[in-house]
Length: 521
Image 1 (tube, rainbow, N blue to C red):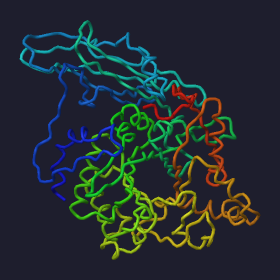
Image 2: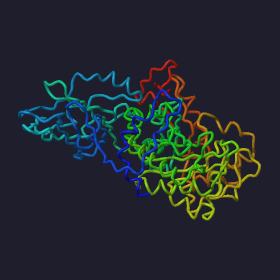
Image 3: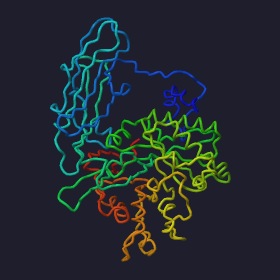
């Protein structure tokens, strides 16, 4: 596996190996024997350059309301050639920046210019370039979050700011745009009540990932002072697939989202969510079909994708029922892939696995998994059966022959029960309505006078919930979309209330169906 470290040079190549005009565009396999070093291309024109993100002209920062707690960044001018003479320049705010056009371009945004009292440029923004050099001295940007106004209620329309900076009285320099989110703990991911992880899946063939940003969990709603937290901790983007030979395939939709990460991914990360790429099997190839060499190449491609697009993790979902007659070839191959990924990806990068079908049926057995305890190498395992409970850690509560439950699954070796999410529901359907007349289901999910609610007990020990295929929001009908979440409240978290407020977030969608978050590409 040491050879995997040698192909970081392919990051640039990867960016051009996906094509939005192809239905399935395969990322080119890395040549793992190549020793070419990494090269960074800064661009062909002079530009303002951030110390925090040297290869990006949009910088994402978070500030808080804590008094005197500043957030800083240093910037300089980087030239495309060596200066022939000394020159003095000044960094200033671009007062002509078209804020309204930016709001329209970034659908879920109500960005406004950062107030003058909330920032400061050291030395008046002045910097100098010496003759014979290609980079200037540094100017420090100081952000003062406590000087920003406090939003009313749960609106986040006044927590999004932009600060466009340019070189005064000069043309030909690339500008620098800071996108700043403000928080005072009222809008936060960490929740004092929500002691579970909520994962949302977004189908990019239909939806913009930004739909995940407007689901809120209102805590302590029965008292005067309320707190709000993001409902979703993790957003998984659907979908990439594995192809023959271990190729990572990206269709035109997920390719567009990844290439435009500043618009569709960074805002979610700014709000505290982790954004991961879901990789599924193709109709003919699953993870169980890969040879050791193909695993190595596949892992290499995933590593490059994570680094290139700034992703927070990889989610693996293999449905062996879709393979056709070929089926699962080798039960140890998939565990080898998981182990290789975990050993290759940085520790902070999430790795999750859906449990469904024959592909993962032997993960409970270390020997059948090639001597690998899969649970030791992943952050979570998810139930891959939509709208059906799978409770391998709580088999005493299984309801045989119930269509809303999968029985007989076994826990992954090395996995604790608090890292298994037992219920994955299609968020576009009212699940509770389908089974309201089923007394076994009602007894499983609600207190029917016995004082026992197995579903709630299991959920509290599982500490996870998955919303698959987060739905769109039609203007004027937002509360009908909220209705889908009533299932979640009754079965999962009756102490809190899910709120859906796309209009409060400043969403400015302009698609023909008058919706907020249908894909806009």
